[in-house]
Image (tube, rainbow, N blue to C red; front, side):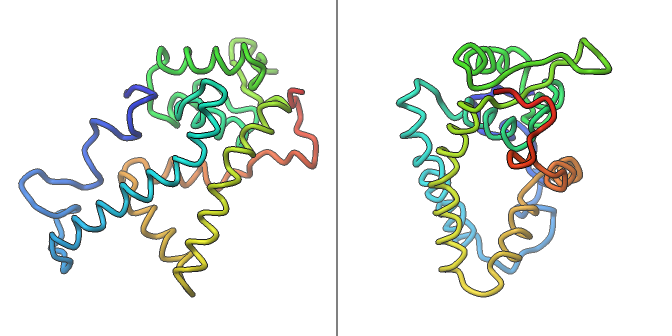
Length: 195
């Protein structure tokens, strides 16, 4: 398990990395190392700007990226169990509890007991939480849409394949199941939705 404020996947072996080989998955790549270094730098800059937009908003609330991650997934998957969120973010219970407590205490997330198992803790965004999650996502959606348009035809499929391939191989099925689960639909009035 890693700390919530640490970069996701920190301390874990990269997908298919073999320390004795210079390329991921142990495959001989035709891309020169200098070009791979350029791509790595582009990823750093893209991540900086992708997270920079919501970072500026979060600062006004006294929140950080950890709060953003939690709020994002609770908003997208209303009714998510705390245990699932821990697994999803690959973090310790201690690191999640501090962030989650702040979001609950300040009225962004509501916690409810499970219907069948009262020990389960289910997380729901409040109206205030939904509004903040949408405000944080808005500049990122614009940035993604503009980048995909600028990249041209076929970019969406290529980007999906690239991003999926960047995920550790053992985590891909879990990510795929999360991505295929239909997010909560605020238009249809989520069952048990917090207000």
